[in-house]
Image 1: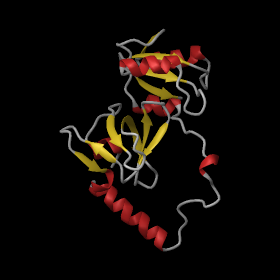
Image 2: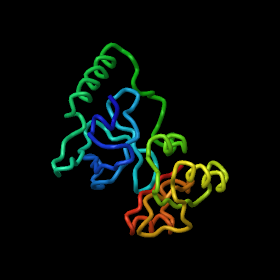
Image 3: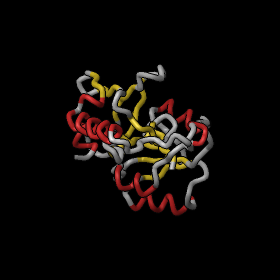
Length: 186
């Protein structure tokens, strides 16, 4: 089972989720895949563009506005049982030597984006220092059918940006947020 089958959505669709432990409210994410252990969803946070793992206790708003915890999906419930069984029998699940300060922001690779999000006839903008030359990034996006525009406006679907630093909000990101454009850091 993949994340799209689990949630009943198409590749590139976004969902609304809420982490009950942060109090920061709902956020829009684009699911990419189930995590390796199957108990969370690897997704792109549309506010900052980085990877966010939707945990089993997070709330997911369904299309009928009903909310459910991820753990309530039978597939996830089974994977959680398997995970707990591994913990019970001594298989390490978390490295105790890693502190939260040691963890870097995680981004989707450009290949992961191109393989997951259909871009045919979708308007996208590019900003920041990218992991490849801008000309190559533009050509790659266009080869997948994207229409690369010079600035963010109401018709733009995605803003692809390079790493700007730890949760920095740039002017282009603010503009994207004001138009409801999804931000993806690569």
